[in-house]
Image 1 (tube, helix red, strand yellow):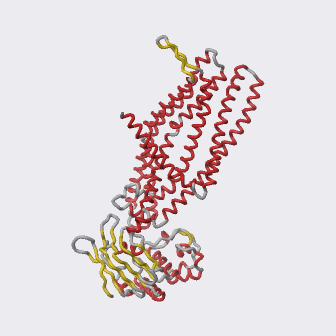
Image 2: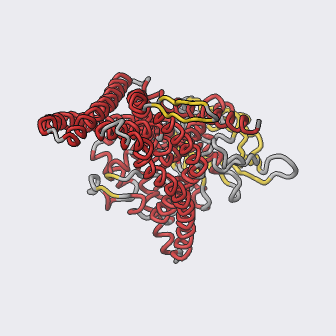
Image 3: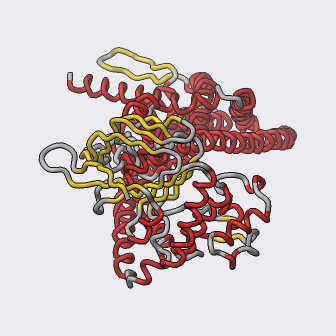
Length: 596
């Protein structure tokens, strides 16, 4: 009963895996590229069948060629040698185009899946929400995957490659088995033996030997190699963690250098790489155990058919050509039945890659729009005014920061949001922007707004692209771009619009803040929301730029909402929203208003 239950569990697990593979596979073959994809797949299947047919022809050639050698028949020998030339040429053409079309289908499929997942990752701030979800209590669940960049870049590549190669290999094995099992059955003869005075004869003896040989090999292979599946899954994760840590060292190279933090960075990278090596060593050991068996299995398969068929050959029942044909047919049947043994390592990697992409898919389903709309304030475009009702803000771990609050701001208002560190000022800003999912209430946001975050983002590329981001550079003239740089106190960059650089590393903190303000001055929104937008500037530059931001919203008939700690900034605001600690149970802070 225990054996039956184990087999049942294995079959259910296999069925679930097949459904996961199908769920990841079928969207491409039902997409806008479906006819090209299906056409290439059909061509690859046909070429695989062609290779199997060529193997059948080569098997027939083996008999004729080796019989000619045994009989010293020169005319047949040279005729079969000429036939071999044609067969080999046809085989080469089929093999080349099978390779080419397979690689082309893998490339197209990977391209489609990458574009598909990039679209889903970058739509509806999913990339941002997934990062936030890592800090929730369920951060280590499948719905919150690690390293989404690695899953899109590497896992998709491996999934498409292994799915095509393994399924085509399985198809090839099945067709090869169907083609050669009859040939081997006919060549095998019977195996006669006597037990207790009774004669018995087993027809197709070589076929049954091949089945038993490969069945035993498949079972042993699974029990030896099954450790590779979780190890392959873990290897992808630790490799991505190591790469991510190196990227952070590169991004924060200046800060690390100023802090003399090389020792800490080296230790952290060493720890990450130790995990890479540790898991890889375990994977190598698991692979070594499997290779011990598969190597023995493969070598034994070379001589096995000769050992079994040798008595018939030496008795004169069959000739050398037929012996070689039996060996060839047995090799084809044994190779088809040994597909599981031969591909177990690839199957383990495929299983791990499929599981990682499945959990990535689950993360998007967990971020369905309905759930997000219910959990976060709804940003509704409403001209001219800002209002919020029953806004409550929480941390990702569920701790409520801000008690239900009412907000109201009219055109002409310039509001300064203040409060102690950790009181949720930036989280409230994110809530007003409609991107913070750990909040409730309703927000009516003015239609024409821009937010200046604490850490502005600049894409690598030309300066004009960094300045116009996220809009196209064609939306602005060179004169407009250059004037925005001058107004933001960056006159030294006006001649560098077409210079390509990594601007987040090239510019100082103050220059980055001025470039972010240059964007605002370029696009001239009605409402501006600034989160510590001038914290890295000197007082004179801060005064000048805040004056220009204030003049801009006044001219445009909008308003200004700022987070800032310097007293000098308060002079540019007419109202103050203050977050103060709350006594007793419930939220940690409440919002009150002071008139400036």
